[in-house]
Length: 374
Image (cartoon, rainbow, N blue to C red; front, side, top):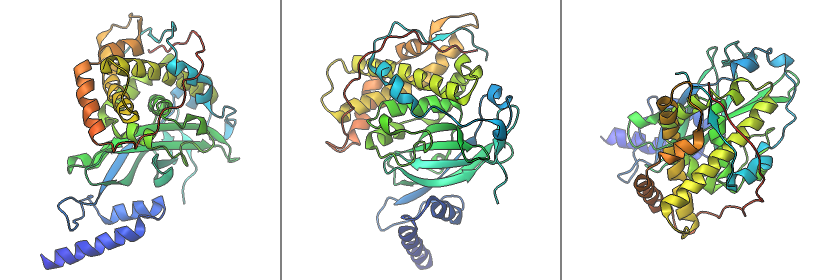
């Protein structure tokens, strides 16, 4: 017991020295831990736990079919959320419809089916803007990287892949939000694929924060500092997000996008429409004006979490010939009492006056916007 206690104390000291270092140092320390067992401290609660994030990275097959990295031009779109931000607070007559539903580092590139090999995945802590871990996808497009969660507190991370051509120009970016709560051995391995659908969810999380104007696709989410964004993502359920992403990956705006510029523009528009439905439903669930920024964030996060789950239900419930408003239908299945309970639990974890307000509502811009799933 004495030997184990001394060893744990030395590991804790090593962690304190390495934590301020780069994501590579963090990844290396995660490997030192092996299975990611918690490190004992003087208290009853482990101070840091290592969590493995795993998944795959892929682009829509229609983009991969156009050629490999070397033949893809640089993106011209810079910040797709600026143009669509007004939609997030607009009561639209526009429709989001399902028309049909069916069930040395090697040179990076993609396969004809959309798998991206030898690409760099960055793990970003949105609270600090720092890259806290990196991984390289294998030949099958899969990745695994270690990150750290403090105690039993929920933690939100953003995964991103910035794809560059041989000239070093950014030709595309994909992202995914992932929430981590390392309370048991089973919860120390979280799966999240990075795809078009997950990028839509990352954009939605962004539009619920105060920092969307700062997003540049050349750098992605790195450098962004937003406690609001961090707390929204911390409540993302990985299982629901994974399932919702797969539904959204089947959208025609995804599968028929002629370029990365078009794909990201479509995803930004889609995320604004989803954001609107989440905000509307959260205020309906509260039944009154929000008393604080913390309460507003808690309701938004609770509704977003439920909506990701109901997106799957909607996709499974309707036949291939159905034509329905996807996000509105998903929001209509959210249970008010469930939202209130979840929002209360989230708010209890937020210190008073810890969350900044959302920016002023932008001027409404009408439009006829849609997403078709196949």
